[in-house]
Amino acid sequence: MNIGEVAERSGLPPKTIRYYEDIGLVRPQRSENGYRAFRETDLHKLAFLGRARALGFSIEDCRTLLGLYEDESRESAQVKAVAEEHLKAIDDKIAQLQSMRETLSHLVKSCHGDHRPDCPILSDLAGGSRSKPL
Image (cartoon, rainbow, N blue to C red; front, side, top):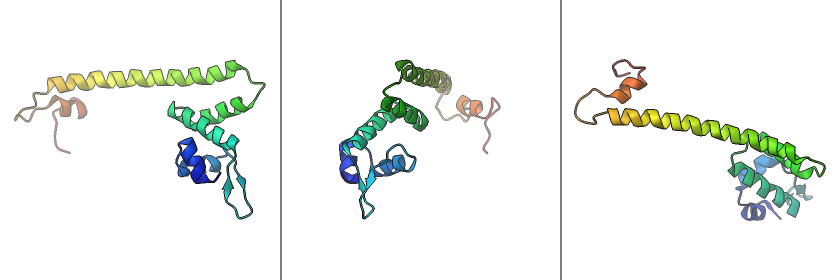
């Protein structure tokens, strides 16, 4: 398969596929004229990577997971540890976003949103002091 075919079948853009090749996540064969020749195994790896990235795994986590996937002597505990670490990072991010939402919601409710210049949103962004133009 050429890069267009594998892009269509994997759902990944050609630019992403080239990047994954550049960083060694996939290694398609090359024809005599230098064109990439993707195999079914390459397509499977790309689909795997696409799904892992859609779940938010970093490139390095993807490298680790792909290595574990290809290692038939792996222990599922190794895979679970990577997933648990990522899940904790997601939970931490959710907590941060919830805190940001609560703060911003409070500020929005505190702002009259009328013709007066006083604005608690700007005051808070300015560090609690009266808002002044920058």
